Image 1 (cartoon, rainbow, N blue to C red):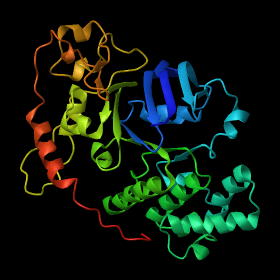
Image 2 (image 1 turned 135 degrees about the vertical axis):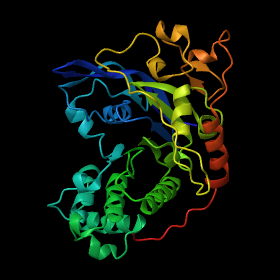
Image 3 (image 1 turned 60 degrees about the vertical axis):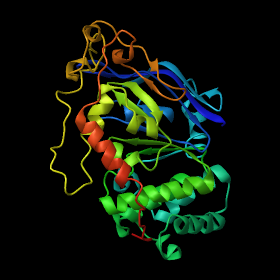
Image 4 (image 1 turned 90 degrees about the horizontal axis):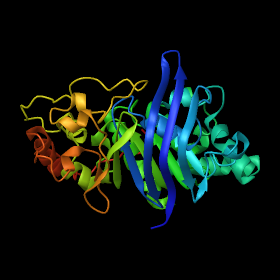
Length: 355
């Protein structure tokens, strides 16, 4: 499979009154054509900063890329100027933001917002761009697109606004689509519809997707691979099956165990990861997760673990994978969630258009 994106040892920091926050600390991953990679983790883990850095959208200053490469089709975008990035954003790389109501321009008709990219990047006339905007609104499941194209964002429901955001992002047939928690502000029914829509559009357009979320359950039926982030680092990465059914990092265990049950009859309590993430103005020595990890070894407080390879596609950053480490089984709550996922995530999603 063709590799379209390679992120190598990316480091991003922010200057604050309290010191330098090391928000992204040596992140590396790649993405293939037509693939969906989900990046998951708690708030503050660095996933959104990583995704925004891929488009160089972080404010500089106070933000700064302090190291690493972002190779898009082999071309490093880190040294590119703002003018050069303007020719990439919206054309080759697009983004769907978390809250469409704050991302859409309330003073512009939705159709005009879709037309902007078509006129700028594809050189279409206003008439042709409007025809294409209507087709895009129809493609993302918005009813009466010829009428909706002339309406403002406040005239759309929450689900329709997110569909409009997807239409804007896909208008120029980007090679890479970054979805930064695109369903967080939506209720679960519409959330399922938006996720199903993204899967359908990706199959039609062969677009690669980076999907950012704090919710592991959201990506179960969407992603091909999953990267788990903690304290500015990727601590585990693998296929969906490897992350859900053979997780190796204690933090991944914690995320899985804390997923709400989809079984109404279950009596088990919702697990929680104790403690709070570390202060990244002064990252801890050793494993950043050690203070919250009941399986931590003495070496976790002394030396940062390397990324151990489990399979060709599965890697995890934990000393528990060292040959000399004691054998530790995932907690019972993780196994319970795995059984529930096996029986529930394969059920079909019923999608109604136009919501």
